[in-house]
Length: 607
Image 1 (cartoon, rainbow, N blue to C red):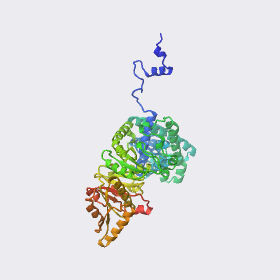
Image 2: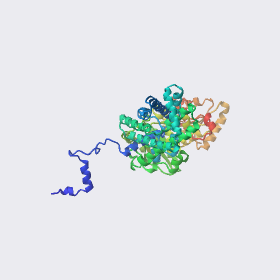
Image 3: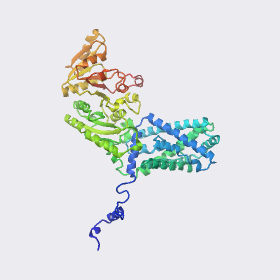
Image 4: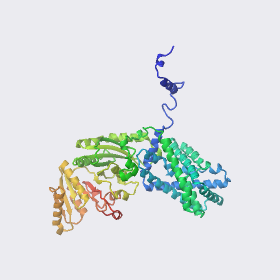
């Protein structure tokens, strides 16, 4: 007699049920605890690595690539030495060929052929622009070639290899130059496929031993298959040039160029045709990247920063209700601790409430210890984001009390200070309101790019809040005739409306003969900035810092503008002339307005 319940099952479900169970009743392999990553998870790990690489500074990328170029020299040296000592045996001579590549991949150095996969994956998702990809490739390739050239020079003139090995090294270069252009290209394309495949499988591996085995076997196939790797070929070419047997232009065009193009095409094709399109539409789901609205526009994707943005962060969660108009006034508030920086958010919301169509975007920047692309953990970052969302509840309630458009998000990054500038550019901020103090991540000023490069052209106006409690009842505003004081005037007017502040304007002159001129300046300036009801104070000591310090004791909040040398760079390098920033008990707001600088002004530090 048949089982009626069994008869009612769909045939496909019956088959699936049979497959899912063994005779003991245990689920099939991988049904509960999978022993390998899915293609989507591998893609997530790769894009997480690319997320770190694409945002790294040129200096970091270059020197990492330089180390990789040196490591390639080890591969070249061992290959020619074993070839000479084994009589040219094709298998024995190649046994140590992968050693340099093992150093590079296990050590996390930047190699151009390995670099084709992660940044391309990010670019295909329209999270990184094509110019950002090309910049990454250019810097890495320059570092690889520089390291390879220095290594070739050491081998050519340092007496490192035997005369027999030197002869083999010269023969390898000659053989490459003598090979037909199309044959070089084809062989290099297969090598590119192998290297990109190594990267994919490496991120699928769960332990170092597995990675080691994959890297060794894969790179052993390059010399055994008679294939060509661009950095190794460049090292061979430079060695031949240093021996005077080859013109560098001939070597680059007839040997290195076809190998470089072949490696690039082979690696990119593997990404686009095989690995990328085998993943699903949910490949970035656990990386907290949601929706096409977070991707670069087509113009941004093609032209990068010239058309808006060059990069969209992989982890950037947004909650709240912010308006979408392009003409909105946008205030970005980077915070490192949602529990202790509520006053900073309060200040930003007060400013936004006095402007029509203004919105506040509070970004919690969670800094990871360092660049750890191989150790990326979706679960770990998921927990970080979940905890951040809970902590941001108080922040959201502050914004709701002001009845303004607001948004909160979390960004997980190995950077801190530089991340502020990238966020301001991505959000098209008009104003950045940030805190400063020993408990802020960016107080250490860690940046992947040079500080001068970051601060020479600001993406928005900046207000830096030294928080000793937001008490805006008595405001002191030192006045000079520049754009930074104009920005502070906006702050004073907003706080006057929201907190009923009493405002005192301070003008410092050189001596008593200039007192009358100082009073007239204050009257005119106040009238121009809608602060005519403020108290006017003229100090004739000529000492700006001392004058501010003396009167700051009677005020709860001091608004100070940047000097000619700028504000942010001096805060980071601890070279700000105003010791009162740290010595007074009053809260302080330091303002720096975004102004365009000429090349001369950037070099000389003048506005």
